[in-house]
Amino acid sequence: MFDFGKADKEQRQQIEKQIAENQQLYQRIFNTDDGKKVLKDLEKRCFINHTTYSDNHGQMSFNEGRRSIYVHIKNLLEKDLTKILEELTKE
Image (cartoon, rainbow, N blue to C red; front, side, top):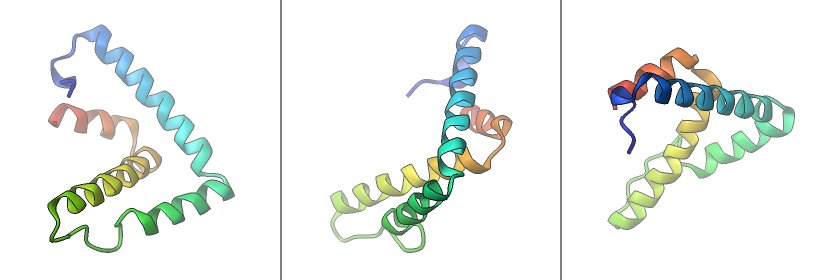
């Protein structure tokens, strides 16, 4: 994974710009009535309100992957860009 904390100024600016653009796209799409319905459907399918646990480790990893996509979408919809960038430096 790319280490945002070690990126030079130009790389950081490019990444910040791309994240800001993505955030605007996600907000534009998911803040519509249809987008909200899709998000609600994803919530049901992505283990948001129940455990991802499975005795099968492969299945559990798959479930966590589904969950992480939903969390990513919600972060782009709800978090301030500054907060998202701060979290990138902690990874």
